[in-house]
Length: 227
Length: 257
Image (cartoon, rainbow over all chains, first blue to last red; front, top):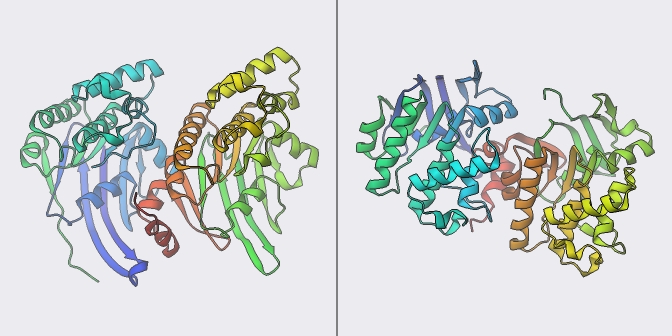
């Protein structure tokens, strides 16, 4: 489902006198349908950078990121912006660490917007069901999540990420601010997604979660500072 | 959807010694929202005016694909044809709604006028449609016969949006649509634009100096500096992983609230 080869990434900080930070070099990764690969390595090694590169959020300097999109392989690293938009809409999902709240938009609509191929009523019904499963009580659904707790925001974000039912899913610390009960629900959801054939790449600092969901680890090692 | 709706090549324009546009290319696909960002004086509004045929360039060409699939050279069109395009297929949302609205015509009249310009004649139906659009932009239809001068700035801007969208344009140009409004009013307007544009599948070229507005509304962004496009691409990629020194400066200059 996902095949990355020879990925390289550096940042040039023009406002800091052009300091160059090398983060990734020669990273290979392959994920099959129904498989979950966990990125492992110390903080600052480039795990989030790799995940963002796979999503097309960060530009890579070299290598290719091939994703199976509607029967064909699309290289995210070289695709035109609107191709990346299409791949994200139907194939590639991403759950970031933090929810980006939009003023005035309710928790329910944030999730319902991500439902594909459904009437607005059906999308809302499915969004409400998933929010309840993640223990977001109905009385909060109509509120914009700006005032929610960190854990509640993360669960809204997870609902938004999972409801699109993308065949490839990238998860950045999906359980970081969750309590035990909610963590178990997310582990269950990841398991169910794998059973449906979803290919997953994730960062899980919680080793219990990682052991429960990951089939393989990919070690991301910090590069020597070239600066 | 494999054909561009609007494409421009080699646009250049100088005002005396000042370069407003230097060899700018741009493309827009149906249903896509493209943001043009940069500081004051970077040439973004000039680019918007040239793309929409309101200002002539010194060099370059702008092609528009009309509903029949024919390519039209925007700057070679006869003036009446360009005006007709602006009245129906296109819309233009100005930063100052008073540049677009007729302040001595009622709110309903402002919305209905665009329909009449398209040939609608049935008074009852025009009124109905105007009322429906006022509701869409969250203006109480009971204000339909009130003059725009009795409206707040945020209401005027929403009225301008109703007037623009009533003809179901395929392409809307927006120049700082939320500029000069209070933040709470801005949030409401942004939410409205976001929802309507997505629901109606309208293509938008949006000029803004506000990177948060670009992130919220646009799939793609072009960064301009001194009349040149210095960086472009997916909005989140350009804002989260800016490559050009000027884009890095813009992104790092935004205050986190």
